Length: 176
Image 1 (cartoon, one colour):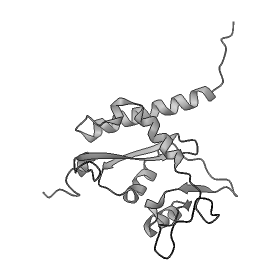
Image 2 (cartoon, helix red, strand yellow):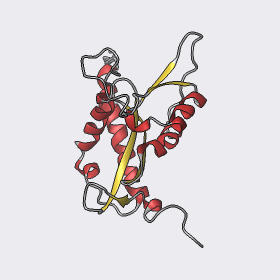
Image 3 (cartoon, rainbow, N blue to C red):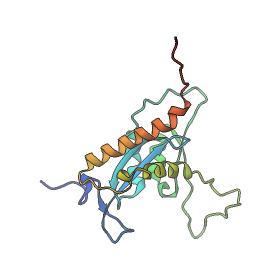
Image 4 (tube, helix red, strand yellow):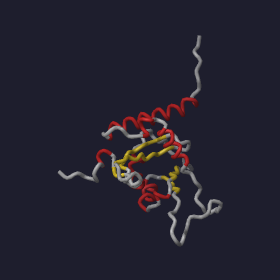
């Protein structure tokens, strides 16, 4: 039987274009406004981020509350997601996509002070990746099997969520 996908796809590895073609793994992360992870998906390092958008949106494990009448949900993405497929996917999911346009010769990226420039919001996801990289077991993938590594990544996500939300919970004093 022929294997579907590229070599290493079943183990979420692929040739890393920035590391002499060594096998590498990429985490695609979806966060809420403060950088707390909502979902994480693994793929090979050679896979484009825009191809993983549907997977990362489907991987959200927390039930999303129903929208109020005037409420809207927004999805902020970087220039790598500037494709018609990603924009259509956001519409299909009921999200308002905020994706800066890719630079072209006719329309270069505006200067940082230009009001036409799309505001930088990528730092929220970068903070989430930084929190993951503080765990040595996650920063470098040692596991050969994708399911084992994904388990450690998900455990790390639980620890990050707990560390960020625990200080917000009210402390109850024992009665008596």
